[in-house]
Length: 89
Image 1 (cartoon, rainbow, N blue to C red):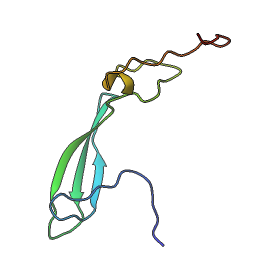
Image 2 (cartoon, one colour):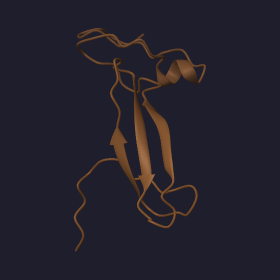
Image 3 (cartoon, helix red, strand yellow):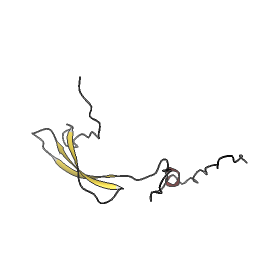
Image 4 (tube, rainbow, N blue to C red):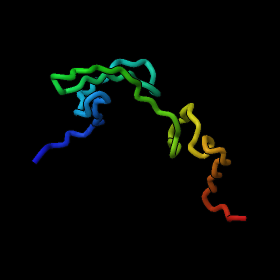
């Protein structure tokens, strides 16, 4: 039985084998560079990419994040939250 240690899994675009992913260092909380190397020794392709957060699906209860919500991105009006005890209408 294989062990899944979590984390992101990716396949090499050149040969389809699994890749080893290493994070880079970032000064931003919204994006981070990542590096990947194919585990197939015959291929050994290496790639650089970016892991980034693009849209807020559910807003944080403690802080605002400078990203659009999923509704705003789809061109919908953001849903209004009802205050506790507020009646609909």
